[in-house]
Image (cartoon, helix red, strand yellow):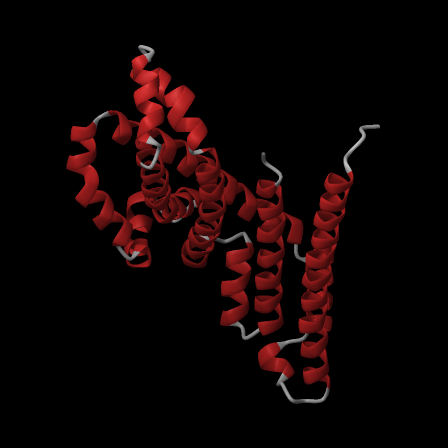
Length: 258
């Protein structure tokens, strides 16, 4: 077992207490929110038809699990999210490298990237359905449109913020452009890319659910649309709760990447 100094041991204990404190308050807020929600519904302060309740959410999810292929709907939504997530990450990093490598190309593309990023992607929904068809492809394309340009702009700006002294030092040793990128630019932006993954994930969730609301016959977005059409608000809120839980789990997985 390693021997630590007294100061180091105190520091580690402090960090451990801080983590436990954060976890405690997170669990406390989570339970307090759902507890208060259940109490307000129970005493008819909130209308249970409009706002559902935690107990009804659990009952609805249990029913879906037994009778409505809930796992299939979750699996389809997750598959669409993963495909669009990795596509947008790959294309975003690749395009950012090209922008960094070729300055003329970046100057030409700069206004177009800004315009494409600012376009209301929801308004393009009908066009996307016509182009790609009412299928999974249009859902992934919608998600890709929402997340890709944010990924490109964030990572490319990170590449531009690299300490110029480090690049000058690399050039003084005769480093090629590829070596500059490999040994200076990319390592300097590792945390930026990890932060982009979190943003990217949330954008992919938005894109996939938007796409499923428009064209899907399976998935959590489809269940939300179906529930709203038949005024089954317990189903709508249950699926929204599920999406929140799934996004949190995926967020924790990204947090584990070092």
